[in-house]
Every structure is written in C-alpha cells, then in structure tokens.
Image (cartoon, rainbow, N blue to C red):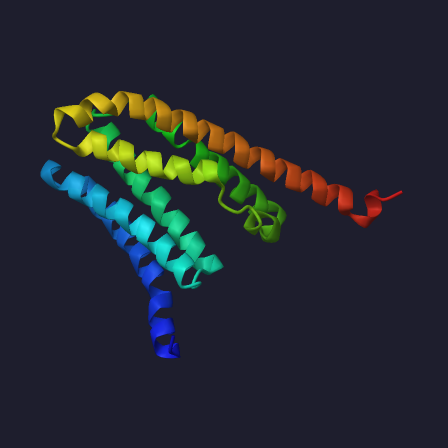
Length: 191
C-alpha cells in the first residue's frame, strides 16, 4: 500500500470514533424517531473502526483510548437520556455502567500514583468486548418501535448487566494482580 493511502486509512478509525462522540452529544436532543438510526450508526462505527485498525494495522494507543472514550460517552449519553425521560430506572443505568466505573477507578488510581504504564498494559478482554456489543444491542431494543424488540429489552438488560458486572470483576482483578506483581518485583522487596 502506498504511504499516502496508508496515512489516510490510519485516520479513518479516529474519525469514526469522533462520529460516536458527536452522536453522543446529539442524542439527548434527538426526536424519538431518530434514536434507533443513531444507535445503529454508533454501533456500526464502533465495529468498523476496530475492523479497519486491525485489518490495516493502523491501531495506536491514542486511537484505542479515543475508541474506548467514544463508546463510554455514547453509552452514558443514551443511558442518561433514557433515565431522565423515565424510560429506564436509575438502578438499571448503574448496573450497566459498573464496568465503566471499574475502569474509571483504575484510571484514577493510575493517575494518582503516576503509573500510566501499568494502566496501558490493561488490554481489552473478551468480557469487555461482549459487554460493549450487548450494550449496543440492548440500545437497539430500547429505541426500536417494534413489539418484538420491546419484549426483548428486559432479557437483554439482564444479560448486559451481568456481562458488565463480570467485566468489572475481571478488570479489577487483573489490575489488582498487576499492582501486586509490580510491588513484589521492586528491588526493596527482594530478600
């Protein structure tokens, strides 16, 4: 692939992530009829930016961070919009964002102790990817006007919340293990 095309392709995943950030900002003001298309667009851009980054080997640390932030901001925008309008209960919002709270806690801890290298080593896992996928599918059932989608909303919520809790436990366990390993590897701890 020629260098000009490679540079252009390298930008595409980040543009797609920014698209999700714009969708997150717009979601609270959207008419109900536009919610489903925006949710589908956001889910598609999430899949597509990852596909392009992997397919063309154009992933970067900053791009992965932007992707994760875009996913979380979009999800939070949808969840808060639906909770404020009374379409979701606040406890549902809390259960679905428990994974994101765990990530936030570990990021805050890494910032306080100035150990970003340890935090950057925390690669996405299957549990987190499954949770993100389930969140988008659940959002489709919440915003779709079809009766089958509305009937699927509660079972999908249960699955999404359970996946979020599993991902949070996995993430916190891995981060704690990494911190313990780091402390035991310090020279002053060696006998």
